[in-house]
Image (cartoon, rainbow, N blue to C red; front, top):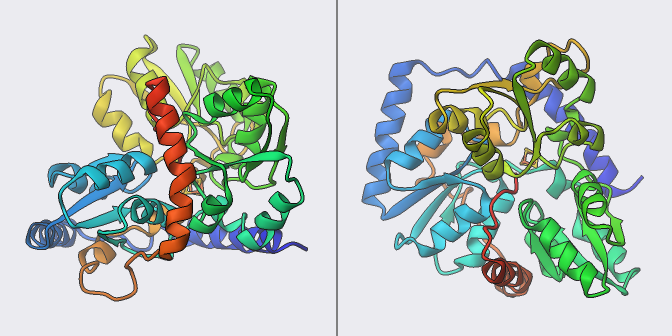
Length: 357
Ligand code: SF4
């Protein structure tokens, strides 16, 4: 069994454990407010700015926005951090997001509530296996999703996010290039279908998006015929077929704002519902089911690693030694090359690079 598949079995156990215990750690409102105040004061005192992903809990997203930081996807977070004058970045998200921030801003201190928060795509694509896979296919251009380690990025020709992946692969296809794409097999299949490119795809998946079920979405559509279906492209092909719009986190928010429908069935991590409700308060959002027709397992659309970002660990982020992100400088310089390539390409197209999970 490969290292990647051993890790994926461990991940399934970890997700089950998280779901079984996730409601045990509720803070009182008074404790939440005390922690928020502590964080506000430390951010101000330490010349720090906070960036949070859409999938983190509402309280963290609110704190980031009200203290002059931002909420977004990983590259929006990294680019905001790079442009902001603060010398310390607090990244509420998962580890590859902290690493991307450090790669783009090696001169800054990057802290996270916990470095334990990772991603099934990152875990399922270790460089020890991905490197030889690339070596065995030297005729292919290596395109990796942002949800990867710095080492995997450093091995790639291009890094992409979900909103620009299709454009980059279409561009390479038009140049006659064959592509090795990793690590998300569903995103890879979606891009292959959309572009007709010759893609060799790594066998990874997101434990959250892989769980959405087409049957369950059809059942919701029967109950809510007025609803449009918004799907993240890390979902399986059968789920994508049910979609009115397939898009990144930011594209999902934009579609909810722009489409005339009063109701949306949304297939992505439920953390996004805070941002949806805040930005489009007049509309109704339904979590896409994760367990087939008539499903009731709504709680599963919840990334266990994003949930590790908590007020308590954030409040102590400045005082610990186990939560600063370091990237080997040589690795960081090499990973910067495919990241820059994507940013330059996006600037030429005049499109955003928003959207990886
Ligand atoms: S939601 Fe999926 S892709 Fe995003 S961090 Fe969690 S496991 Fe990774």
